Length: 152
Image (cartoon, rainbow, N blue to C red; front, side):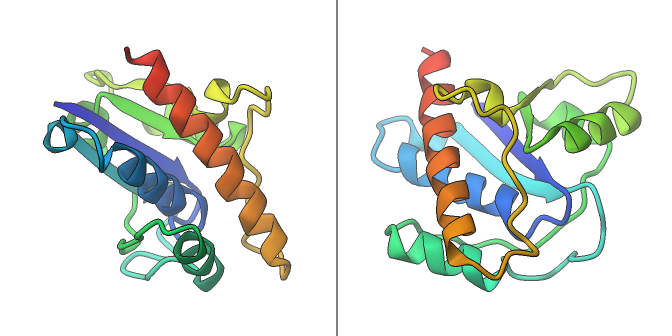
């Protein structure tokens, strides 16, 4: 089984979108059942919340199902998942601060897989412009495709 955890600050915009995108990309593969995909936030502000309305709208427009409730990262996530993929350098720094000594997960920026070289996924949370969410979706789709290719 391959397991991936996407991490952002609040777990209502970028990381649940990444979770949905990767899930959609593998949904047509023969090994769909061999994957565990989840997302979490470094902060607890949105625990139990549904994804941001713009995140849901963009995913729906793209035909990508999204079902998630916000949750906070836990210490056990570092051993439960093979890959912990952060959205930006601050998230990566926060992961390093809470990573337990027994961690086995590979920790990286999801943007490190971006063929366009955009290493950080910008947080669209404060944007009133749906285009910001569309751009995040496009970047995450590129990154997730490249991530999958890197596992072959």
